[in-house]
Length: 77
View 1 (spheres, rainbow, N blue to C red):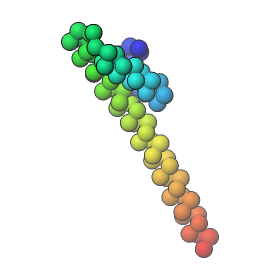
View 2: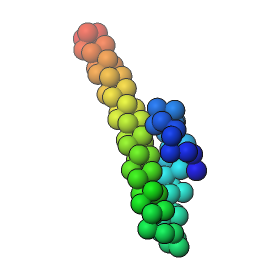
View 3: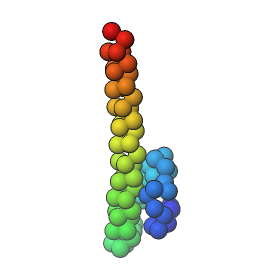
């Protein structure tokens, strides 16, 4: 698992997603102390925000591309 000091900006989507899957797996498996569970939960929240940021950026790029395509088609008419 990446260190808690690693910034979200340094993580790519796939890296954040994979680490988030591991955090969830560890939480579901149990066997951790309350403090460890809280630390995992907090890390999971950070990772979810990173994933959400990447997905929102991808959505914005797709929307912009589709809008440009529509504009180009309309200008041809």
